[in-house]
Length: 446
Image (cartoon, rainbow, N blue to C red; front, side, top):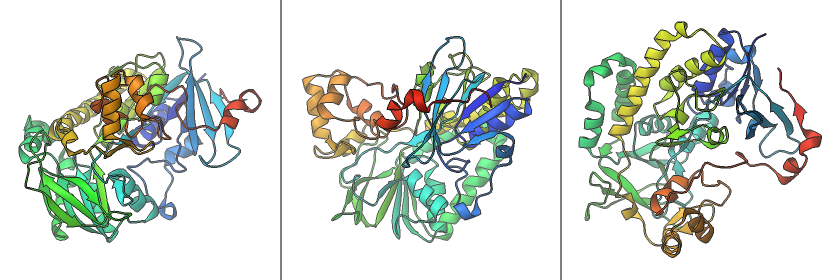
């Protein structure tokens, strides 16, 4: 009898895991909250979408949210609770699965550091700006500043240019020395990834063709406007991201697209009992986590891009399905090279510790609860315990439940809270929760 492998997340890692698990002879259920597979990396307009062939061979559950993982037997993977249907619709179908193996590939959130005015309409995360362009053909503005840190700035700028937006500048916050030192370590390793060099050259050529300046050591430190963004203030930064006084410059824009990297979506791994290390899921050479029968792939194990996610997904899906390990030698080697690229990425684009110097007392830190920097500091001074700070300031208690502001609040607080421990991983209506026993439908075997 074949194994039943449930995979959460249909981005590059999840799709690769599904393909490998099917090839190893497993029955696969693939779950994703979006209505199309592919994740952010493969996002495209609905009229041009071409389903991935792997979807024809597995049990594909689109628009399905895993809202809870429930452990009944410490020796087996947890029960997977799912709500199927549009997130804002009524009558979502409630189901659960008891798999032989569970692969978690939920991806990551955009990381955006706060600055005065970042809560104005017209300030977008880079991921949101790109998703609107790639998925809906909607541009966020006509005059856009792209700023933050990391190579993701380049494809975002390219997507905006392709859609007809004028990109005023692309700003990398880290100075050239930090970037070159990070990418230049053990340069011979880059020879194994010629596709990355070609990709970089293509982006550079596109920026040059549209005469878009790419500046390092400079960041947007304020957005201004009456009701929406009208201008952005940028400044030169030191290596620790503190502002060099007197270098401020004002730019007229109608939108700002900003990213300072990504944070992994750890709600489900934490609910499954997976051990974390340095903020990511700890996995072994088979992508197995510390939780029996649970595997992880993609950004939850480290931020390293789509090639690493695909390689990890292949290993996770294959081993979760019980495939012979001897057939993974080349895939493991490819995964290890991709992980090395991730380490290089982290070294070249770190977040400097001086960024809180951008903040003013009234700068909003938690947008859901409109918690200001001043109120957060006041709460921490009265009682530094993480729970007390959250209750007193309301930071992280709004609709996003600290998914966006959590890392920022942790860095600004004397004691770091645990933003990932949530018994209910996704928003669920009280009525849906109350209707548990009547509506639950067992789907333990596909």
